[in-house]
Image (cartoon, rainbow, N blue to C red; front, side):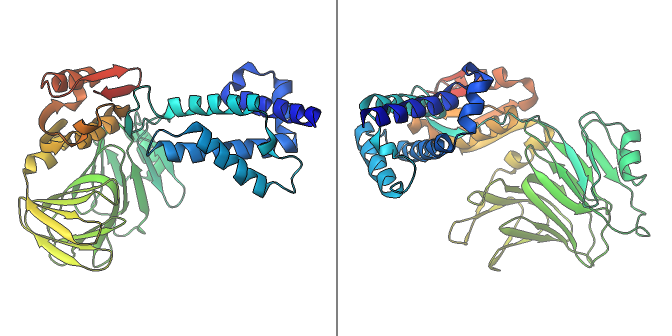
Length: 384
């Protein structure tokens, strides 16, 4: 029995080493682990345990003994017909498992037990234009010639961060385009009807090469500012996953990064906003319609500068919670945002900053307010 436990402990330690420091293992050791059914089962159970503790940790610091006992009982019940039972781990292996698991926790939750409100994305940040027919081009440094060769002469590049569609393309079949912006970059599009769209960072816009139906319909995920060309015969429709905004010709901002924080803000003219269940509200210039979780709209007057300045290259917040401000900074600069001082999340602040001036400039301005202390460590901003 002791020999069986020792073999199990050794196998668990091998799998833990594979998870914790794969770069320290020889290729032969990795191959041995990944080709062994018992090791694969062990890995699955360890990941289950890890996820359970992470979930508990998000609410409170876990009790290690309690979590380990719960895990043992769960695995024993589920593993009676398997090749071995992880519940039979010795105290040494169990302790080693908990040490490694809390190493994982340390990576997810910082050393100050702070709350992560935004996570950086390690993927390459690119502006990408795609069509339903499979054409695709990275626009970061694309030339007008590359645009023309890929999509045809009806699209022209306008500056580094812009493109426009020709108005006289109705003789061509309409094709759907998807424009995706990364973190830290915005983009301007002039649609075939003359409507101007400023697409904010980490957003996606779906639209046709030209409008041929009674309604001019586009889809948005993220945030965009619209200056809609007037056409009373053809209403302009902006659809998100939970909102529909209908206009004839006006200027407005739509923000829909998440289903729990959807806004339509009117600058001028008139818009009609409806939710996924058909509930409709109308807003006037200077008003913001915020979709609540119960499906109702909270309509109130706002400082519209907050919804205009971003397209001109500025962060502008008027009496906005610090957590919302920091999430915007995290999205633009692609950094982790961690609140060590959780009470500071609800601080209401006024903040104006040139967002293309660099992250250090943004941090300096916030620290000058003396309400909180921001400290940058690598790719993470801590708010204390």
